[in-house]
Structure formats: structure tokens, C-alpha cells
Length: 267
Image (cartoon, rainbow, N blue to C red):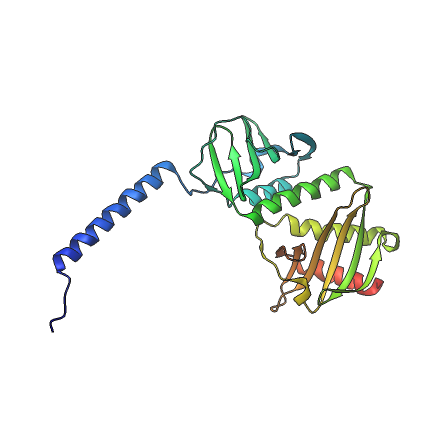
């Protein structure tokens, strides 16, 4: 029985067709800029950055950021955004809740909105473009706003609880009443160090970690609580994770050692 062989001429024609389609598709993507990364100004060009929040149409306040390094850290959170096929035709997004970033520069203001819509996450430059970001990147922007707002306003309606955990079980707990001013500053430095990092990876289930240190920020006038978990990966890389099943970012090792020492001594 003869084995059927596809004619070489047909193979060549098929390859040419696919190559032509690829070139056309590449040309369309290049001309529209689809999937291109967002272009952001250098932090040194920004005089001041305003980060504000609107929730269900209500203005929740804004924070002013003047420090060049802090501005750079926030811009890094946005750098991974890639252009989508959506277009921007409004002054502000149609979403009822969003974050607004206003970059004031010498010649022009650069406005960027950050929001979620139908389980997707976006950056939008009014009348310019809409970009997609990951859930982790969106949560970093949210966390940065909360952290900056608390730092600037010196929110007195929040307190800290720190404890050591083994496989998800709390062993000992220490609260604000037992923390020194230096320990509170250290706790805030640890949280801030993790929040400003642009990279984030899917975290671990706290119940699966042999030992970690938990930091809970409790808002005393509400039922809300922000939880952070500090632990070491197998290769002795220190990380801080938001939530018991959230995302983690790399934590400065010196800060990890300091917080671990402070908690071990105090408990």
C-alpha cells in the first residue's frame, strides 16, 4: 500500500499563506499599538503626584506625593500595563469606583485612572488609550494608596497586632498597647517596603508554612483588618504576603531579620 505524501508545492503554498497572514497580523498590531507597554514619564520630570480614590461615586480623598523615590515606586507599579483593544472616549472611566493618578509636570499634567471592570483590571488615559494590568498589579496600587494615606494622615483609628504562626496557627500575639514606638515604626517600614515593589507573585497558603510572622493592621472604627505575612522561601529569600492566600513581593532581608528579632524578643 502506497503511503500518501502531501505534494511539496502544496506545503510551500500553505507556508506562504501562513507567513502572509502572520505579516498582516503583525502589521495590524504594530499600527494600532495593541499590546504595547504604557509610556510613562521619568519620575524626575514629575513635580508632584496626586493619588486619589473614588468609591461608588464618592470622593474618598487624595494623597500628595513629592518625594522622587516614592513617585518612582508608584510609576513602577504601572509600568507593566499593556495596551488593549478598548478605546477611551470619556474624561473619566464609566466605573463607579476607581483610583486617579495625577502627574503634575512643568508643561502638562498626565492623568491615569486605575479600575476594575467585569473581573478585568485596567489603566486608562482619557481620550488616549486603555491598558490592561494584572490583578496583582491592581492590588499593588490599592495597597499603595492605603499605605500612603495612612502614613500621611497618621491615622489614629488603627492599631497593629503581631504574632508568630506555625502552619496557620497563632502561637503568641502582641498588640499596640505592648509595642514600643520603635517597633511600630519598624512594622510600618516592613509593610511599606513590600507595598512599593512592582513585582508580585502568587503567594502560599499560610496553613502550609512552617513558620511565619503575621502583622495585622486593625481599623478600630470599622470591622476591617489588613493582614500581612512575612516569611522565608526555601532559598532564604524573605517575602511579605498580603492576605492568607494573596500575593507576595520581595522584602528587604535586613527588615525581615529586624522584624523577626523584634517579634521573638517581645513574645
